[in-house]
Length: 181
Image (cartoon, rainbow, N blue to C red; front, side, top):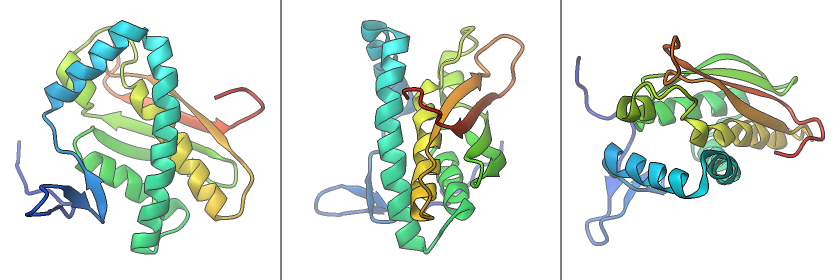
């Protein structure tokens, strides 16, 4: 393993201790702390209910993040999505690779390698990165709205490296067709 310094800009306010990246406030916590809290909430609510809650929260957060980052860096279209995947990867969630994206069709396919969840929890025989799912639809929808499109999307995790026989995760985004998110 080769180590390197973070590639994202991090500033810490010397008075408040608040971390920021591209003027957005950030939290820096150990992976085990975050995932242990995640697992505790999942156990209390059940994975299905928790996934639903996280989908909506993640969707909203991704929309906001993409909107702010597009403004900050003068990005638009696919460049916003690729910047989002890069920043997610740089922040330690895993390595997100856009395998396909078609804004006109409202579709994308993202491969996830080196998932923080799989590193922490191992092969548990199910999809465990559902927290990320709403991020992809939120990002796509913000980009589409910024282009003046009324098209909206829905995302789902189709595979996890935590499942037997799988080495990577996959997320698919497609147009929303009247089904509830």
